[in-house]
Length: 100
Picture (cartoon, rainbow, N blue to C red):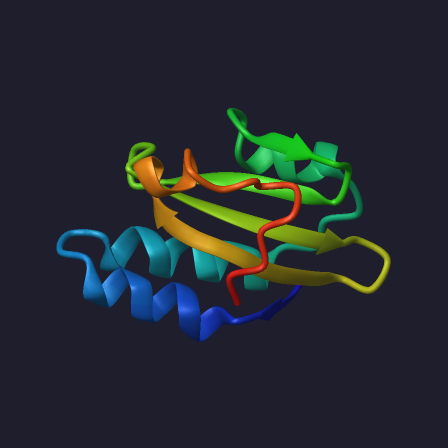
């Protein structure tokens, strides 16, 4: 998949102690993936949630952090829309957030 805002994921991981490796792993998984549907993504991330069809919520580092991404399966694109702690996620609307 082509990931837009990969540097955002990596920078967030570097800025938050103990989370650099989990964000690197997520970025690599997203880049290496060839998903064609939400079900494909769910196979890689079983506790995954979908919002409004194209948005997916990833739990990172044992659910300490959340990443909201808009998926374009046809064009093989992943658009990072939000990266933050679980508490920060609880304050946003994952359906409409466009942090980046």
